[in-house]
Each structure stands twice: as C-alpha cells, then as structure tokens.
Length: 237
Image 1 (cartoon, one colour):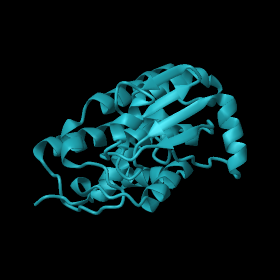
Image 2: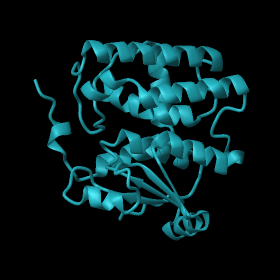
Image 3: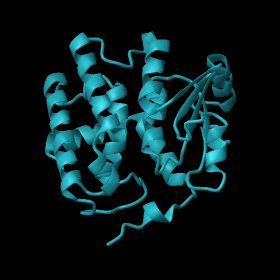
Image 4: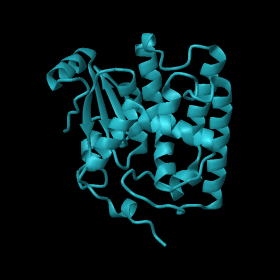
C-alpha cells in the first residue's frame, strides 16, 4: 500500500483523511486513465484521502483489488462502510458529500451538459481507448490513427470547442476547473503521447489542464513510477 501526501506534511494529510474516512484505490499512475479521474478531482478540490496504489497486471493484482471491491477493477473509493467503484459513480458521490466544493458547475444548464459529456466520455470513445492507450512516459507520435480513433478525436474536439465557446477561450470547460476537466485529463495525456494536432484554442486548453496543480502532480508521480508494462510501452508496427 502506498500513501501519498496531499498537504505540506504527511501527518496532517493522514489525519485529515482519517477524519474524512476516505480511501482511494488506484492503479499505476502512468497507465490507469480510469484512476486518474477521481484522483485528480479529489486533489483539485482539496478533498483529503488515503491513497492505495495497486500495480496492474501483476500476479497479486486481482487479489489486492478484491480486498476492496468484488468488481475487480480500479478505481475504488472506500468511505467508512460505503464502497463506491467506477470513476463516474465516485465523482458523483463526492459531489454529493462535498456540495460546498462546487465540483459540478453551478448553472443548471451547464451542469447538465457537464454530466452529459462525462457520461459520453465514460461510456464511449472505444476507438480512442483501444488504439491510443494512456502512457504518460511514452511518445508515440502518429500512432493509433485508426478510423475509429480519428472519429473519436473529432468528437472530443467538437465537445471542447462547444464548451469553451460557452465558458470563454481562456477558461476550463465550464469556467472553473470541474469534474468534467478531471474526466478529460486522461484524454489530454493521450493526445500529448500520440502527438495529436490541436487547433490553437484547444491546444491552449490542453496546456491549462497540464498546468493545473492536480494534473501536474499526477504526471510527476507517473513519471517517477518504476513499473514497466511492455504491452503498453511498445507500440506494435
């Protein structure tokens, strides 16, 4: 089990996490896009938690995840006696538990749209996922450009353009950083790894996401990991 410091001192963080009763079970930060979403959201909104990082594709991976959820996948949020699995369910639960944090946009229409694009991200874009997996350390420029992946890239650009047209060209998707930006942060990682060209306004949005303290921290810790998974580190010709 790995515990990550979220505040200036580890003891303060653990004390706050214990009081909040939150434990987030994640996979490798370099590879686990699903884990990235709630971790970034919780970190961005200052929600203290204890981190449990489980290495993927190891002999004991399933058994270790099974200690927290019978679903057998990460991420998993343990909140006292409540267990929440699935990244979208975790973020919805946190938004309910911490309404003062404003994790979703306040405006009703914007909030509905934010939930819609997160649900679309959550259930769709299979072409992108299968051809352009997340590997923050890697550089695969030009790889993964299958027709399905290209269609997904076009749709994501359409979503970002629509959101930024409403919120402003120098903002996040809905003005302030929200769950929606946390959900699309792994996509930003993919686009960087695979060298996907973006229009200037969308590239500027990606730069803002990368510069956000929560995302920047995830990236630093991903780069510092020692595990290597060959099936994700080598792109087949």
